Image (cartoon, rainbow over all chains, first blue to last red; front, side, top):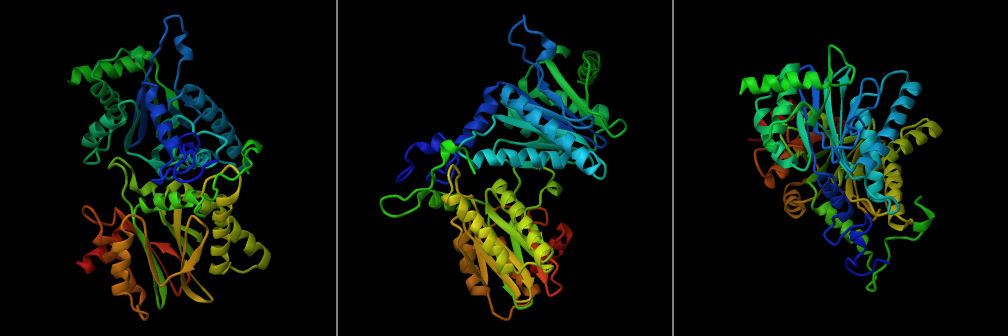
Length: 246
Length: 235
């Protein structure tokens, strides 16, 4: 077994390397990027919007089945960036957990509680050798009864934070740089501004203009706190508004 | 715990008699953000850097200093997700003690049980040690107390201690400034000055966290505006 200094197993299972790092967790982050997709989330004054690329690798595939945007409950959405199979497993467990929460405690699971649950699960995989970390970064969105619109991001290491805006996936760092500039003075975006900020951030970072069928957009608003995936027509309206604005 | 396939310890002795996984865990702690604690005559203060990965992160969603019971607080250096596990287990143990004895758990007992959990993970099958060191601060019938628990599960009581990136400078600074008859207010000022020593960038109420407990036996985390007031006093 592992003997002496860093005898090779520290890259195969989640034990410490000599520098105190967890290589398996770092590789899990790389797996999130390897999916080749970038996602962006933006929190406005009274709404939250998440956007991701919709890459359909084969024309014969049924496009409606290719999705990374999942409703967890009526009011909570989850955008999974990274390995699709890991994402589906996580979503399935999250749906179960949220339903149990509602049954046990009599009120809807809040956004931060679900994010904490996902993050704590991710932490277990970083500490127990028999399970590898999931190659998924999750963005959870919803309207909190007390705190208003909330956007949380959970990563394979088990970290989770609330965000004013964030990104995950291939062009994560470029997107965060772009969003930092945009959100610097704490702008309070309206619903339309929030959606357009998210979509235009993605367009700018990937340096291409999208068609409505090439992206997926999910929203929650205070007015209608149900998690909704926008239809192609609605996405088109926003895309038009963005191109007219520029 | 762990699958039967992994029912052997991953933390094993090296030929020189060291447990290398624990040494590596201490490395992980040493690369974490600096945190420190000071025991005063009438209370305890703990403080930590709260450097977030981006300005886009909503800092109100993050609280590094946590309560284990109303009169015991904890701060960590190292891997945040690991600390959450320990806080959760300790809270449950404190509550179980209270249910049995109808008395708040003494700090030494809670520290001992938390340390036992950390030791378990250095010996059980299929798991790695925790990548955190904890500073547990509280006030009970034995007065104000401050304990540091390491990934190995060993713990000591400290008058003042620091952990994380800037540990050696911080400890030297504390050694010079510490006095046995310090009051809580002095300790808070000293804690801020110690953090300031190694701080990269502009220190403010938004990128440090401070928790205090006094003779009222109520641990609380200061708001960012209270911290800003203290920072102004220290200038």
